[in-house]
Length: 326
Image (cartoon, rainbow, N blue to C red; front, side, top):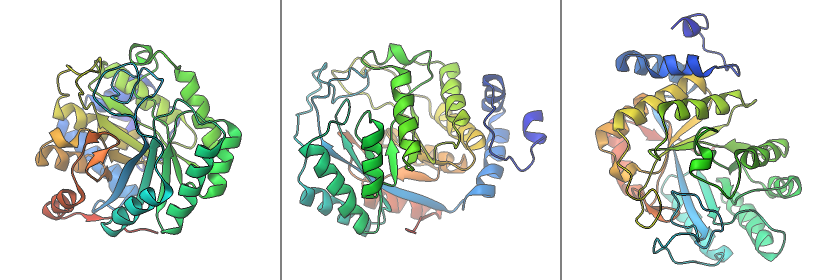
């Protein structure tokens, strides 16, 4: 623990090595959670959890071959394609989410990259109008160029989600239609445009612990570090190459969240996909480990997710409360 003891206030660091992160990850479980709690309480209110809602605004037919994704055109997963939604449909969903306690509304489109034209103009108007509801607005639309990122920023976008998914060495085992460097370039233009970064990964795709550690190292070296870090457990979907994977061990999920909390002290660590297969006890441990945000709503794009009423009951049981909007 010398690397923590020498920094008792745990300032944000951008020089973590894989070995240092691994040493934290491998601590005895009670000690790991204790250290994560110390960091969590220094930078966050441990009784507050941000509720976010994610809506698929354009579904299916994606030209990427991400092995986990039922929206890929490469796989027969039974997910029907759906054109870009109308603005009023999106606003209705955003109002409902806001009225149930969500402070961030996220919109996802199954695109490889954003293209100029009428659909992008519609997304920009969605961003403006959702922002007028008093919510934070996040988009995940695929790869962006600098001009597109600036236009999203001008429309009022709060955050842009672009996950790295796993460590750089394992990435090409999951996706072949784009590179890790492609992802990093989009994150750079998002940051340059003044939009906050939402970037995380997926557990349970066949990666090693070293791959998970490498992902956290890449995220920790970003300056500034991502404001939001979603940690997903693989949702196994029939028809995708990863549809028959075994569920990730709950303790492994908690370990990664606790490790992320320590090396990414100011980031909001979001417990994301896969919660329908997690027990109340597993989710409670994730909150103890430093998770302080969840996606709430019946679906995460196309996969099942606990609904808002279920999540409010969960928070009530644990004595936690939703973070209120700023």
